[in-house]
Image (cartoon, rainbow, N blue to C red; front, side):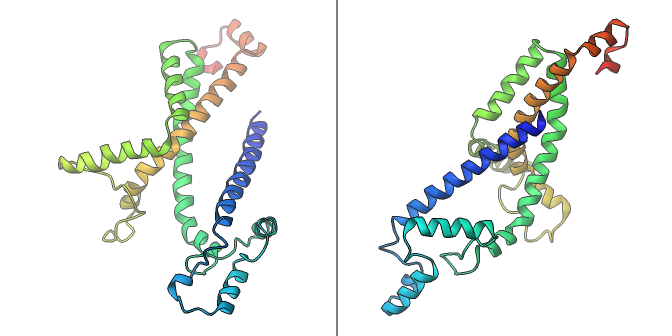
Length: 236
């Protein structure tokens, strides 16, 4: 069941990525005939220089060929060059990859730690007020946009607490310039974004764990164990 869920999410992600890249390149294609990145820095560029820039960026090709070439490059690890500074896109990705892995890894760990007990409690207390409350929180995790939740957390834990002279959490960056990479400082910077990101994981996984546990609790061997007098703690 878990493998099927992961497979569905994986293929759905591929479709989303292809859709986003297609829309993005379509929008970029609309400006290809009127703008060449870098020409504003040197209006005196000769026509042959502009043509070379267009060729380097693939702007002289038909859209379908431009898109297919880009997809082929992505499959082989070549994401092209930045239209801002001319450096490779991969270099920008690698520069930001450590912080990205740190953030997502922290969010996943928080999601696992919180979602497992919530899912178990929801299954054991099915139909109770506790179960209904957890369901409401889970639905909120799906429904509330993460950017809005992030803004609210910044407003409360960064802006409001600082205004009242209370300990507050930083709202941006990976570390403070004066902290020198101190572990506590990095944790403080991770707190808000990791919490926002983990809320979706908690909502998804807690519902999945609840459903899986309800399915297991309805099995014959569970009923047999209870009929033989085994304690609920040992059954669970």
